[in-house]
Length: 408
Length: 205
Picture 1 (cartoon, each protein chain N blue to C red):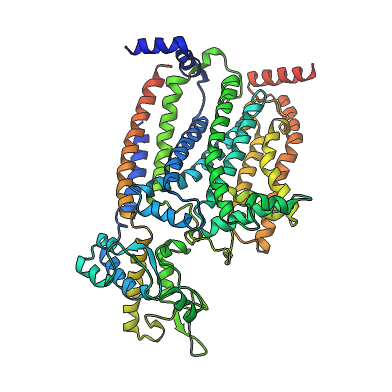
Picture 2: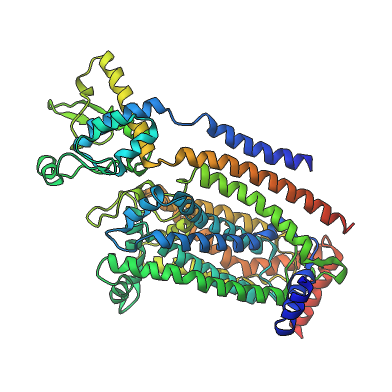
């Protein structure tokens, strides 16, 4: 019976061919570690956010007089409303944890390298879309931090030369964050996830064209590839189980972990909170913004700090594969960079007193220096490593081939 | 394999054990409910709490009837003093208390510290070390209390904080109960995924 149905569909739509090509026959390197499972997790969290978001929207009121109360209505009166809301609010943070890990893996193993530049750039686009979605979603509870966070961030656009103030008014729908801001943010917060879903499809098409990178960085022979299903479906499911244990532990036992206490106070345009702190996932970029004394300079630095990842395929000029695995100096840079981001995050969460400000400025300099030094350091390290004779033969072969190709 | 299963189950059991004893102190919440409805509610609203919600923390129907007076069971606990009168008297509308236990850094601890933080000031006025310049009077009179009365007032403050903690998050108990089941379920599911993964990957060798 089911065979007949599939045959009927196959005559009209390439269902079996699709499943075969993308899953049961899709070749995947057999040496992928669990670090390669975070893309799947990101897709899973996207679905959680979409589903819980749709149900929240059934009960939420996008009106500055009703929004805060409607959240409490969801928490107290809607059946399992608290569960839907906590899944969504924790899901936002989970999404960034997963995506930042996914990016860190790409940076560590050099997965952004040729021929995966477009895959990396569609990922960069997804990051920007996600950040915009998260930022707009954070206004919706209409708490103090929602309101003042949106005020501070929309105000950044006033640094645009010439018509900065006009852009701010255009974004807010008025001179201050108010009801028109809330309704447009709600509309966009509902729209963007569908754009994200489309961008994810493009990301996956690019992935299935160039296929997964792997920890060795080598192009594996056919015998080293295994079909995605069942090997990686089950491996990803096990990873998902571990992820869900942590996610549900927060949802059920510490759901206020990512909710600022000030956001349990309704928005009050007449009273500015003591410190306005963005959500944790924006803190490093916020610290960079505040480390530059001039507003326009800070905004530019912040934008560059997010967008500079796109330049990685060109900044990393080494032709030795496997990212940090065979390259001790690149590895050191990677860890310095990761620690630096945590330092920036810490600085971003605290008021910019003198020592904190200085720390932020040093950490900001290190952030950009790692990118700026990379073209020189990577090429210098490449020469040193190729002469050292310590690299595996196939890694040397591949690097030499690439070097020859670049001369030709 | 055994190691992983052990690791996962330990993680879950630790979490469950860590929260199991932390279940709320019901008598304290009930005493706090009386103080909140009889004292705090004079000036502060508790707009997300309805009288009938108090039945769920174990107050009897009679107790709730006494507290609500003329109001109906489905009414929220609005402040007895009108907002305009409060504004005229204190120069500020007393904040709603429904979410207070989640709206301040420190949560319920902040509430205890605030309520017991009143002390005689230099100019004969009462000051508060947690919130200097607070408009709220020292309602329990802790600033002038002798050690015995002080002890009693501290307990009252703890009870009020316990009640407000419940009021801010009435679903906490149900949430933790469900969470234990969910974590055990996911832990077993994950262990099964692990075994299945081992089994499938063995084909490659």
